[in-house]
Length: 258
Image (tube, rainbow, N blue to C red):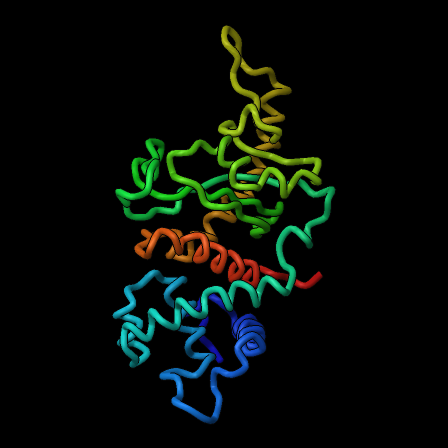
């Protein structure tokens, strides 16, 4: 079964996902009663397609020969199922050694500027969205994501408020960029007034940047799920669930057996 361009997952990863979802929803393809418009495996592919490409539901409905309300209904039902099914596999921080450096960074997941929601507009990025804090390993693979916050929030504030601070306290080497100065993360040296950085400080900053660049690559891979890298158009109260589902799919996509 090959749907790599559609879902972002390899055939083996898709088989693992479908096996987990089938155990969670055993009665989807039941032989009695009114059948679903799509078998379970294809409904999961539709969900992954929407998350990977952020296309309109009417386009997915036309491609898979079902109605738009059916696409919406399947997506709403299967998002938490997919999230919880992959979560049971135990990916993420649980498999990261304690002595490994842990780089942290944040990005803006763009969304519409909802009038009912405050502080979505980020002056730094000049657009509206949610501040998402990301933790990776030194190879650029996703390990953890914090709870989304309004886009106007500074990274140093979001680092604590999102819960990431508490989740990585057991790791000794926690790295962030200059936006995290004042937190418990190791940050680069800033140029002090009236003098230049010393050679030792410059060398330290270079080493710091080489390690921390991994989380920037990780964010780039996470934004390849266009529901996060593009403009999120769904209801704002469903964004945390959507984010958690994408995170679990990315953890599955980047998992490598020890």
